[in-house]
Image (cartoon, rainbow, N blue to C red; front, side, top):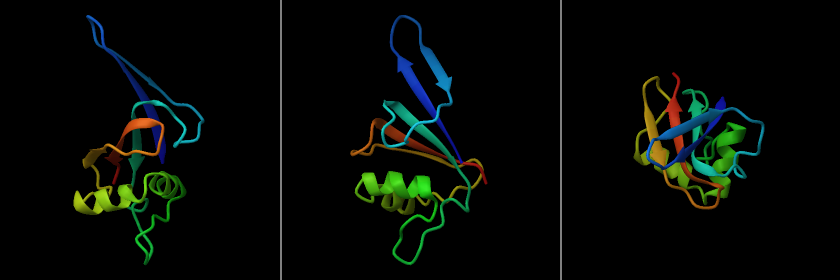
Length: 101
């Protein structure tokens, strides 16, 4: 699983910076935290908790809204799928899940 931070800077020209960095996903601050996930990463246990440690951590810091939203959006990590969610309780303004298959 990979996490990519994106900073959007508004000015006369649009500047987008992409970077990879080792940081706690719930502490990272920015406009959107993009998380590439596979179908295996989206597996949940009998209590609807993610088994993947990164998704589990994001979900626990967002009052379980990530798991609920992924169910409502029918997002399961298939290649070509994506969803962007606004979650409170974490450093980024939004979390984007990008399906990798």
